[in-house]
Length: 346
Ligand SMILES: Nc1ncnc2c1ncn2[C@@H]1O[C@H](COP(=O)(O)OP(=O)(O)OP(=O)(O)O)[C@@H](O)[C@H]1O
Image 1: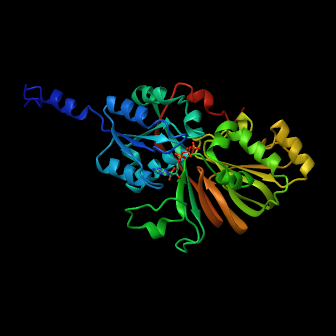
Image 2 (image 1 turned 90 degrees about the horizontal axis):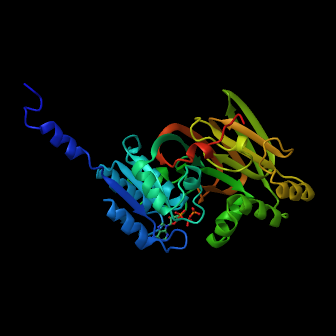
Image 3 (image 1 turned 180 degrees about the horizontal axis):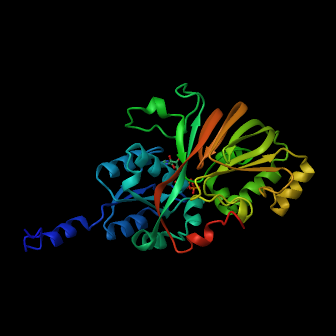
């Protein structure tokens, strides 16, 4: 028998499956908070189910709701923290393979959106409708000894999770995890300052201002090309990037290579610090005081508990295991994504 039975059933089925289930998780507090009505209106006009975060740490729960509703597309309207929350919630629900993620940049710095070629709110909705899908890596972090409760991603009560205790010290990152001076400064500094200076300028400025920073004593083990590499010493910064624009283009992490880019800026005499910060060489892998590893996993041990910034959220621990899950995040990107992607061989 003709599978359509001559009734046009096939067409009807296609029609049923055609409308994508689109969700938008909207953080009304991101950035200057003035975007709420506009973003909601743009989303509702386009058929999105809109859910607003009511408190810090709510985004993962809303993303799990979206997954339970079989959403095909979940957009995060906020900054990098909101995107991280959405991705984490979808991962909790094992929904990453069947869900495309997007970002509507209304946060303070919107680093991820910039790096995937999303230029603003209206543009974000165009990209969500017509943009290409790419599969990018996700970074993973685990702090402290598993289950010892010594570390927690702040502001993330992971409400509604049965396994909250076990997972408190674990997390994902789409951008980077960093410790040291910029993390301390970034976690402590107002959004307004960050927004005024932009990330790289902010880091350089923080470094210039904080010449008294004592550094952090770290030992790092990284697996590079299957071989273990170690580094121990006093660092100003330890940065593990998945997709991040620190340093010159060749040092920028490529989120599609299955590798993490770690840069350690060693503690250095003040005069040299000022000179390198002024010329923007601080994160150049060829600079005297920088060490660069392209690696699949890292173990970072600190002498004392440190504040790591994981996509801008705080994780306090004295031991961080960092890993990568290649190509697990399906993301909508803008036309300039390829230009923003580094060529690691440049
Ligand atoms: N309704 C809410 N009230 C208070 N805090 C919230 C609320 N919803 C989310 N948050 C918190 O807001 C923070 C995330 O902010 P997000 O990173 O999205 O924006 P931002 O900090 O303005 O921007 P960026 O990360 O780009 O600098 C998270 O710590 C999250 O838990």
